[in-house]
Length: 54
Image (cartoon, rainbow, N blue to C red; front, side, top):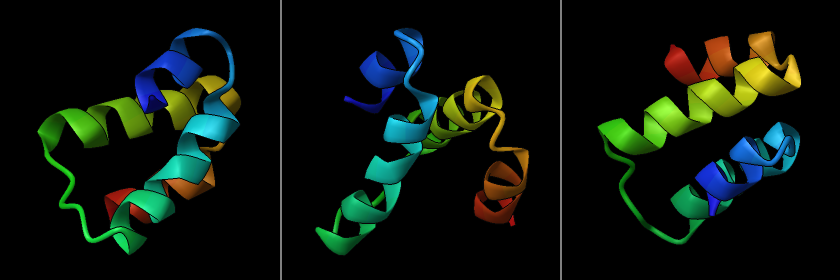
């Protein structure tokens, strides 16, 4: 879902899904983080992407 939003220009919506993923008790993997960072980059959410990286 995150990747679909990101590919279609909705990076902010993709980034909004990440906290929901964590609240549901799911564990993000390498692919999830790659999609999250790409979505933050496309949406110009550099500070948010940096926060998730830390």
